[in-house]
Length: 314
Image (tube, rainbow, N blue to C red; front, side, top):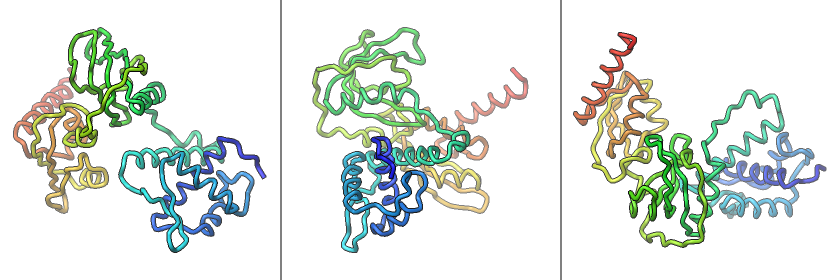
């Protein structure tokens, strides 16, 4: 039997939660043990089954580690009670996926050259400090470098929320002091990859009772232009791009109005910001904007400029 190190135990907990999570209607301990017996990635001692006392130790440890609840139903099967679309569960799912890939690579080192993982800029460097400040309700002192200005800014902020978009973490925070003397008292969004340093202070703040980051960002794609005008956008997508839109909607307001053999029409109700326009541009000629007229005109103008660039080589 292989002696369990802390790292190996974490991998066992992740395997157990992942196994149960793949059976939303429940899985019995007997079925779990069958899967454990044939597992070659984590079951290093090639044990035939998990003894019941060890199973419950792992179960309790996994609940605490991943912030979930593993429940035994009346039929004797185990399932994850808070199996939902909450931010906590999504983060747990991402963590489990990372553990699963790590377990497989550990069992077969040759796969290390076949599995590519996309890094999240600065998440390891600043994320834990920001999360600690959010949990303790402490303000943060930051040094930040904008893409648009050479001068560094040194804001002191109250962290209100975090959002990941396109593999980047963004901090939503209320500015309470700034060397540039601007944006004080306002909510601003900071990309963690543009934060040079961040320190948690001992100064406390009160988060408004009615604050909800989901509601704050609900009308936009990405993080910019919060509070703008909500508009209806109508697009037509060819059959190939329609498949992408169905499998990964651009926004929660996305609706498929009609479906044809060669193209389909989709509608959105949102604030048209730069991130949303960037998503539309990425589809190229496979997507055409019908409404609003000003957005159609703007994208047509960009397409003409792009066509001219490629035609002239300038």
